Length: 316
Ligand SMILES: [Mn+2]
Image 1: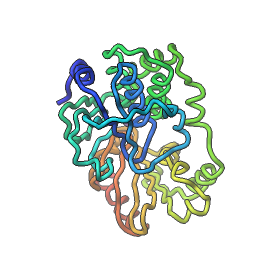
Image 2 (image 1 turned 45 degrees about the vertical axis):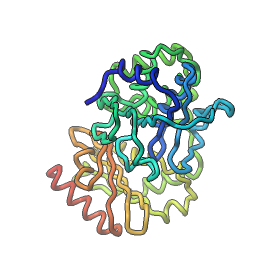
Image 3 (image 1 turned 90 degrees about the vertical axis):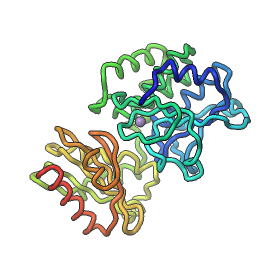
């Protein structure tokens, strides 16, 4: 059961010393949402810090971080998760914390928090953060504007995914009106690419496999491919959209090798096919249009498992 936004604001006003947790596989929504909340708490005189999992770092998100000096030292009293659907998306040493507040937009949310502000109809956790900050009545300064805009544009694929609602555009319009650097943010989030990334895209395109009259596309991205083109972890982000943009493809699967016999599967689906339902067969999940799971085996076995599941689930 989700609480109302007034309850969230009461909690934030009545307490202090927050640690805001982002999810693993850092993205613009979890980081932008966490820092928007951080900057807002700073505005109302509360102490907080943002905790990124492991040593995850993506250069393109560097502008979201505060300039040194506004990080205060304090003993954490309250843990808040932003955009985190599952405890497995937190580092082990954070999984057993008592979570005071969970802010999320995943249908599959399983975080055992005292207060849950969860709405799967919101395109991004940053939409929920926006609603909280409006209710809190803080001035949306430049840092907050850019953080919220980044979360919303990245989680909606630049306002193109089916999760976009009229509210998404209304919020974005207000952020732009107040001075969010939308044009530069969109360029760095979507158009600017390293040479290694372009080489990786070339490899992905040449390794695409098509099934079921071209309704499914599948690609294996092995460690060998990644090493050959010298791609960093950041270069490998968001590759799942590539097979999904092929004409006629309704279900697109990207299988990225994590270990010798373990593949991280990212599914993109359209036209009534559910990526979430497909991934749940393998113990994963996500949204209707985008979901993920892990599948073990060598390439041959993983391919067989995926194709078999496609047949069973979607009656191809
Ligand atoms: Mn999100």
